[in-house]
Length: 473
Image 1: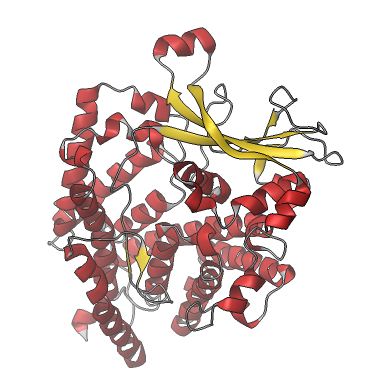
Image 2: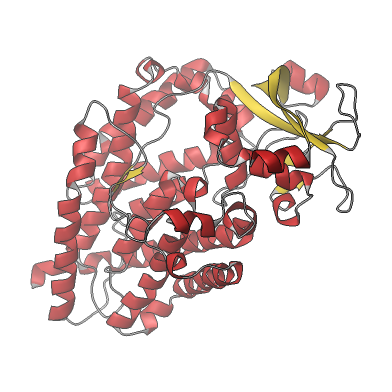
């Protein structure tokens, strides 16, 4: 079928595939380095306990069949190895069916991780990586030109990501409609980056322009993805510029990068296509069948986008084949942070020697300037932001975190920037306090060198020792 492929997009496919492999590599590396403390056998939310109560059909995963920390290590590092091989172009050296199977491996492995990751893996970019990764299986390699229907479905995902996010903003916080959300967002976002302080202090009229430009990019430009070239390329390029602006202004794991990867698939690069044979019949049948399935499943996310009660970041099937996306439907006006402290004193008093635990990414010491971590995902730091919004968000894991700090658990301490206690001298008590944080002004920054100013609000967790924590859990 002549219409089945679009040879002019062979370079677009190549760039898209290599970029997607890089995102996969970061995702697997994040899992390999953090899982023991989060979902390992002695983790805060252990996988073995999860699979005991959740059946395979609700959360398909290799770890439903068998789990051990060693097996997880093998799967995570195997995912890194396959991703690196795809980044290097190994799929192009294989026959068509072999390349498809190679792309299927990281999808199966990462699906297995996400489906047992519980709250640590409840972010929208997990499902987005899986939805895009599944389509990548059917995009083909150098033996065939890119299938038109798969390129269309990639744009369909990008449309839902951007348009869904735009709708949830317009339906949510009134500050989006008043163009004032960025007066607060750079200060209250989950994990500020090294430039976020400067973005916050941009003139307020420029913040209005930023919000207005965001609305145009998310509510108007997505429709241009389905227009002829070069308009579709221009629309995708505008989305890429917007996402790079977000990369500079905060740490959103790989959300911005996977969106950029999607946009690259719509860019038509000027290059002469190589001569390739027609796609084999079996390949055409498989691709069209998958496309029909995904279009049928898209009913749910479309219905959700059109609903006045639109929800965000939800998967509609256990394989994460179609999902709904969106973020920051509401924007916090005040930033709260949970500060965790420990003491070696036998009797905890207010004047005891309380020492603060330092996290890698979330604000702590007001003098510590935020660092750039994205696309790497600091899962504990992100969940600490939710914990500050409400203790209910941390009910399933915060007690386990405190218990492991009281034990000086090595794997848990690796998630932190610094522990104030030597490895062989754990604290006797740990407490948590809630503080209000705000960015300093230009004059305060020059005077104190601190980018944050914090004010004590209330006790979050009273001084707790190991026996009490174990008894509670």
